[in-house]
Length: 87
Image (cartoon, rainbow, N blue to C red; front, top):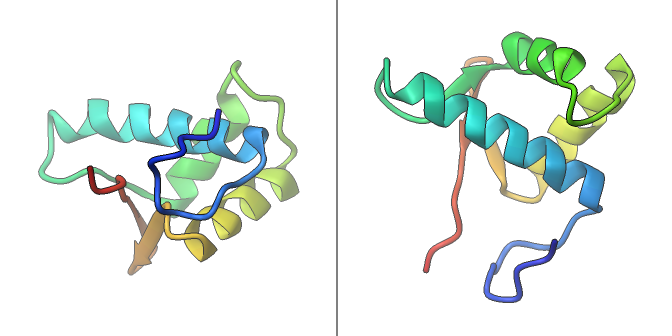
């Protein structure tokens, strides 16, 4: 679903589904750690194992690249950090 108040460029629904999965997963992990992030390889595993989306390895990699390109994620030393729109 596209949020009209979100300043980030829109993406296809299946890619925003990937973002939601990673956001939820990293939020749960953030309770145990500091910050909302996930290692890139672990993110790919989470997506491959997810029952919410049916992705091949190439699809998951493409989705991560698109999310980084559009500012939904950013990467620091193979760690993906989740961004949230400013309200």
